Length: 325
Image (cartoon, rainbow, N blue to C red; front, side, top):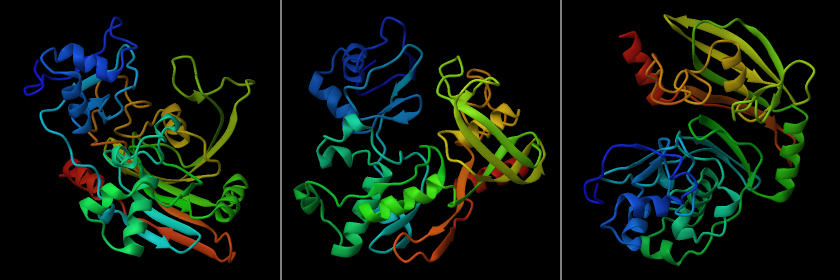
């Protein structure tokens, strides 16, 4: 294929495994220079397993699905980010899907201009706050900006998950919020659409990084792990799927997705814990159908109890409407 007329997605072979994305592009686009391959990445035309990447040094793994699109996608805009609440200590945003909460450690040294080609949620939030407090940045002014005000991460959502996320704006606020998360006094509620019809009740297990197939999961009885508790609060059957609401008592990585999948009711659109790859997801969900609908906590400096709610997102609402139509 050529850089101007790319082919469909490729599955990375064992031979190509451990190549960098840039080296892979140079191999499959033999007429393109190294510089041209970098331009393809910067234009947000390359996806790995459906996720845009601009990191030329990222190593591929055998089995990865990599594609080069004919055109790129524009990066998310700070002006479109919904800021639910902000003061000098805390900011709460309604996270759109397809954005990571924070950047990988190995990417922190990237110049701001490169990071904003594919901004993380904290960077997008910081930019939105800067513009809110200082005025909109022109493209020329943005080029002169070397960094953004720091935000402290106190929680995260998976890339595909949408909904309410809390950031601290000071080290003092971060310490107070993290203490509440660790004590499980922060209320976190999620809405999801799952396959089948799960039971209302408590799900508890010990989560481990690798259950034997390279994915996170629950340890066998008697084995150590991170204690995880999810409460399924309500279930509304919708044919072959159900709308559920659940509350996290603990907040482990992928906790809700793992717990529901292990109960036999994976979240619709979840490529990792849903139907086996290649079998397809009969729900045809546009993404992981999971949304953080509520967060409540004590303000880290005033101690006032604060609660915020988020509406079910438009992309999932339209999908459900098509399913029931």
